[in-house]
Image 1 (cartoon, rainbow, N blue to C red):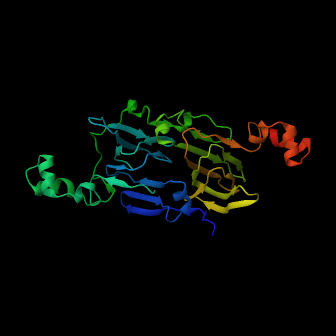
Image 2 (spheres, rainbow, N blue to C red):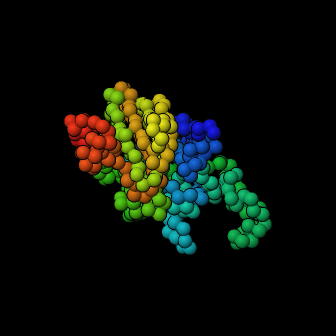
Image 3 (cartoon, rainbow, N blue to C red):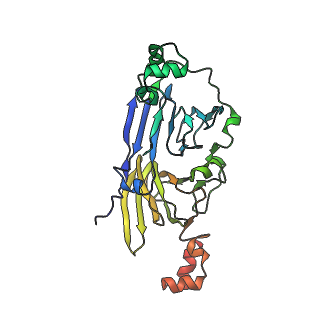
Amino acid sequence: MAAPDMSPKAGKPLVQNDAGSYLAWSGKDQPALAGEKLGCGLLVLKPLGFALPHYADSGKFGYVLGGSAVVGVLPVGVDARERVVRLEAADVIAMRAGEGTWCPGDFSYFILAGPMGVLGGLDAGLLATASGLTSPEQAATAFRSQPAALLTRLSRKLHGVRPREHDRHGIVVNAARVPPDSTGGKTVTAAHLPALAQLGLSVGLALLDAGAAVRGPWVLRDAAAQAVYVARGSGRVQVASAGGASTLLDAEVAAGSLLVVPRYAVALVAADDAGGMELVSLIKSSRPAMEQFTGKGSVIGGLTPEIVQAALNASPELVEQLRTK
């Protein structure tokens, strides 16, 4: 049986126009995503860019790489109140399946307007009756006048839309408030953003300085897979699995590429000499147990030194280095 393709991939543009672009990573092109039931996308909005209202069949989170935007979220439920928030760089926002939003994979998006709109497939006459409109023509005007698919550019700012600071509570947190974890990066979990518990997801963030900085080897010991997006810079990534010297991936990666670290696999990242690297990870656990293999607080550091010496067939001095670096 041929080994699955684990190579990092760039996203494919689904929409690209004067409002911005939306790129997605598909399980068809990257089988490891489908195998771990993960989906990823990258949304870029230009000034006055507007993502049409939609909802999805999967829970999701968004991480803001840069810039700012106003986002609306309509929770599931009768008479639910729309929450309007301003997002800035390093904000994490969590959205449950079915929640409507107007600022966006193998996700299925159900768009509420435009040629991809879910209402466009219904009979205009029946829509008119159900919506209290006077004619099929009026229904067609209401639900089929938007020519854009997913993204459109507004002609002016929407001054009636005002973000409310209190609307951030429970669905948005800024990663700057999250302390570093044992790996030297940051992991935004349900402890920092309770909505992530309902999604069963966490956000991993790592910034490697220029000069061949290395992160890892690390492992998620709670059987959580992760999709890792290279947001900035370039370097080398290795992923290994059980079976002894079983290298799943050994590749150069650059900004814009995405790779998958399967459950229980071990990963190691080294940044290039120039520029460093920024990594953003989708982790399939709301409270992941991410651990380094070496150093303080690591797997090796937590074992009795004599056990490590016997297991590695190494000297006490070498084991001490591995435990305390």
